Length: 176
Image 1 (cartoon, one colour):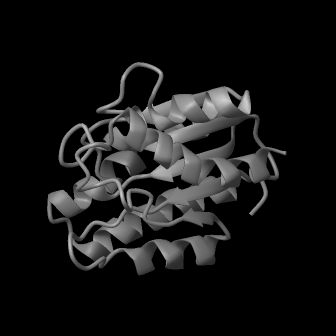
Image 2 (tube, helix red, strand yellow):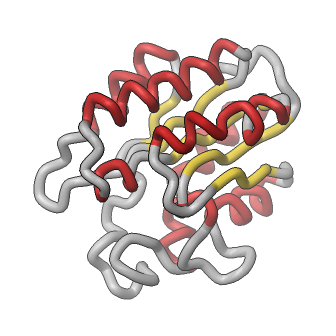
């Protein structure tokens, strides 16, 4: 679980990592950096599926000598109806590759079903198998609440503060 090598902290994923819907400096990556006093590289890219993220892994994460990587990706797979097995194969490859480099991974899960979460156990299985830390269903209580969202998918400043609150304790344990 703890990192054994690396020097940087990288947040890697889709539009939620990029901070779509937040005011400048109010995305969860910026908030975590401010709160912890550690620089965090934001390698979020709107629209990315797990396949896109896997393709970017080398240049956007591994080349940056990561010590801790926050991985939050998968929502676009659900939206685009990528088969569940494909999504979790890609995600498993991402996390396994990062862990082999000696970096710790904070795997951030998102509930992708409006009524039933068909993905939660997939995140749990990857975290357990790779000895990563899971922050489950990070958008719980945010989506569907107009006072916490900028649109139907992305948090607003208040919503991103809640996301940061959920990830911060895990990140602090790994960077001590």
